[in-house]
Image (cartoon, rainbow over all chains, first blue to last red; front, side, top):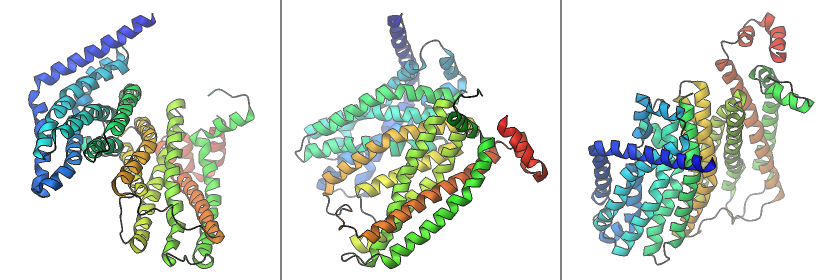
Length: 230
Length: 264
């Protein structure tokens, strides 16, 4: 019986993930806009600050991380809002499959569609700022561990703001303060690597955050979705 | 509601009802208000006239008597607010969510006051209105958390939904507050070292400690009084359509009707 429930949860997770990925692939232009936004923001900084290579190398990890954080906000408002609008989300709440697994599948799909491309694109930003190859690898690794945490924080906030006035600006107000530790450890990983201290401590803390996000995230997001459907 | 067996339990359940808490809050407000005024006057007197001048910082340090109690209160109020939110989610009680709603603006105010007075204190002693010190930064983020809580509440029309959504946000924030604090502290020490540290202040004279204690108690009493005042407004606003609130507007009937509502 227990085993059956567990397989049911994984099946629900896989179903929700595949469904959302298929939907994401059908609106590829939106995903491209997010990636373009990331590259645009990182390209603006040399124009605004200075083209001095030493300065750019020093601020590169911070800029890449802030740009990734802002880019991850872009797709968030659509994570639940579209399904909420056409009633799909309500069916998920009523479905016999555990809601936690369904939202976990949606968040996983959201990360695969928006987070992974950002990770793959981050070396471009690193090259723009003249980071050495091993620092670029650390940047990509920190983004790979950190962006799923951002997806979970964003998922809770997106579910809480369902049906609320204020839309994406409210979402930003809720998510950004909570994302501060991820930003600090993510950008700090690259910084401490280039200063010779090694990135292990930062990446380990990010990993701890990732585990905590996967443990606490599904319950909190499912609760928030339920509240929106009371 | 079922009738609990123990008398202590029945008091808790009795005052969990907005209708019976409303008059109790009204009776408590003058006491806490008066306590806040007396304690603040005494604290300010001791702080500004009795406490000795600091040998290093001169008179400028005296803002500590407002700054530190405000910072403590801002952090503590968030904890209290999150506890009310947890109770409201667990037991689905209306009054606890109303208390959380009533506490949020006061907590945000204290966070703002501690940042503001900190800037005024920092200018003469550190030479800058703002430094990216760990405590300053985490207080700033705390202020943003308060504002997010208030903004989320304000943008959901249905009050019960707003209660529950804001409660989830407050709890996520409460889990995050210690993480934010330690991450910011670590970030700061890695970057610029602790050249400026408030913990390295010289040992405090007894009168200074007395003044700080008085001001802290005043901040507590003020917070309780203001939260009770605000929760009364929230109760009346939310229960405007219920019988006992309608009776409040007709003073002649208020007494018996309210007693009836409380025992119902």
